[in-house]
Image 1 (spheres, rainbow, N blue to C red):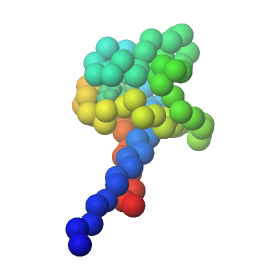
Image 2 (tube, helix red, strand yellow):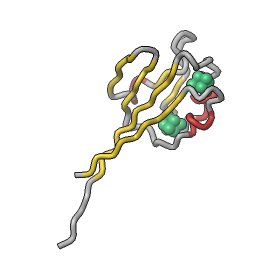
Image 3 (cartoon, protein in one colour):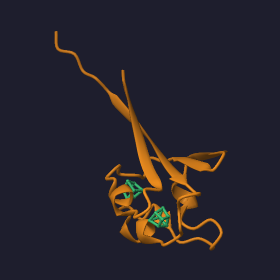
Amino acid sequence: MSKAAVHDIKKTWVIDHDKCRRCGMCAKACTTKLLQKANKEDYPHPREDRVDSEEQIGNFFRYNTKACANCRVCVITCPREAINVEATTTVW
Ligand code: SF4
Ligand code: SF4
């Protein structure tokens, strides 16, 4: 009997605000337009309508979103290595 697996990928977008210089390159490069311009204090900022939940942990902001394609273009683009997108896979 063949078996089927269902994969659920949870993506967490992490920004280190100590490293971020608010250049906006990640927001400009984002392939899904998940990252958008916001006010100067918290720029760059994910689009609120694409964020499922968020929690602030120290200087890190974590966003779980299904809209993120996990392409890592923002990670590669950032000149400060301030962004990471963590993906975890659950197999049922
Ligand atoms: S991994 Fe891709 S889709 Fe996700 S926030 Fe970065 S650039 Fe946008
Ligand atoms: S590219 Fe990096 S330094 Fe520039 S705004 Fe994005 S996270 Fe901050």
